[in-house]
Length: 360
Image (cartoon, rainbow, N blue to C red; front, side):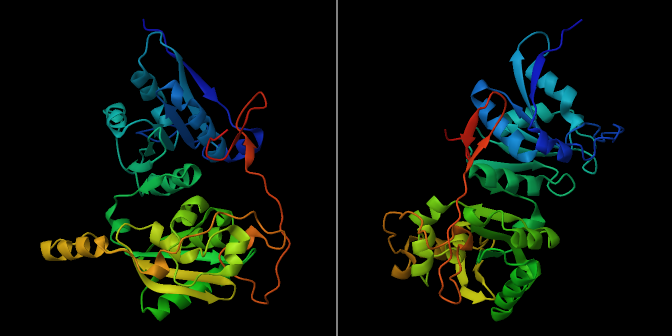
């Protein structure tokens, strides 16, 4: 009789365990999930352990790391655990993931959603259960945590051409976000149903009103890291106030453009009620060779000078401004007091700490 391979489970902090209990009472039947944690993280190499712990902590999940080989293969051990969770993040290649999933799937209505993340944190691929399993949304969550590109291939999402960049003052409401987005869409005569995602800078990813709007309208939030915005200052309306506050020329235009592949600016920065929005159209790939040639020709042309300004070396945050107000100048011209925030957080037992993004 085979001995089971020992699998270590890295438990998240106590503050996250309540969220992990959601759905814990479900019983397994015809592929239904029966486990005590919504999300499982599976790694295949020791090099991915820190990444797995980080994901488990941030997602409120459980990390599985093979300790020693004794009996079951890693794939067999995964098969035993597959239906213990509603969703999975597999830190491995897509090829390995496909082999691991072979023979485990029963129905798209009940199978767990699966996201594949490479160890280099470049791509978070929604591989299985994009809609029913929630893998599309999970891919965005994972990508935002590690700075990866979310890869979504479901037709409903890929045919939506609009990305809206958002910058806002601290504490804006979901209603203010809605008003600004509706106003912007009205100016270009487009519909909310065409919006694929909302893009913003990492300083705004925890903004309550923005997150509430995205959740209520089922539109994913794409987070663009500030370093990337600094390196590609694609703005038509640079703001001295925003540059002094957070070291970038602007938020909404640059974030929307950076979130697309073939994007063109449809609506430049427009401010309404403390919220700045910009709309970028990212159409599906042209099927006609003539159209493709035109796209390639256009892409070889350098962007307008206004879209390629060089940002000076990042300044330290002004003591008279608050990065939480990123992307939208103070309407009254009065600078705000800066508040400090640490990006260092605990990732496990023994007092181990790491900065967000796994950099020590």
